[in-house]
Length: 195
Image 1 (spheres, rainbow, N blue to C red):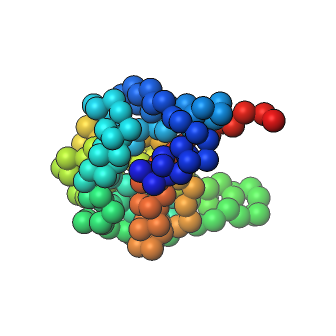
Image 2 (image 1 turned 180 degrees about the vertical axis):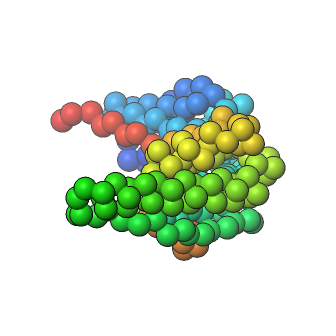
Image 3 (image 1 turned 30 degrees about the vertical axis):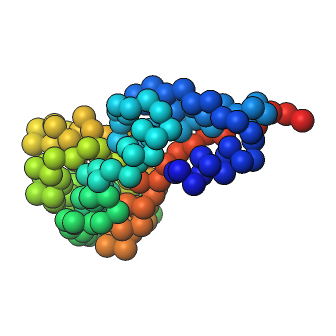
């Protein structure tokens, strides 16, 4: 973050910083503006140095990935994954059959999906519920995530959900680790003047 801000100043001239608990806006002499979303907010020291110190802190990030056939939950402290669990449950795909067969397969698929979401919920409770998280990032299938977070035991962490919502493949350990990198990425919106 510090290196990026230094480079921004070198490319665009003298920089003025305006900060709020959620964003830091860097306005350069040439009219360029960079708006940095504060990760793991709120920011308490409203300056460039405060932002850099905040970013470098050892934040506890929870990650919850759920798709119809798989799930994963993890806790990152800084860049280190300290607790995780991934799993999968078979959920039958759609069928082209019509009539009674199609209805029977649809009921079976719905039951399998419910069982998969219940397994994902149990893993989320075990890994995330007592982890004292600063934020929770989710990914996979939005409806599946909503279903898991509806569990009363996850009420406390459901309030910690923050963007981005990650599009991920079936959650395996490597997918969980890669999603942790994506979840910790700092978002910067850069606007440069028209020439």
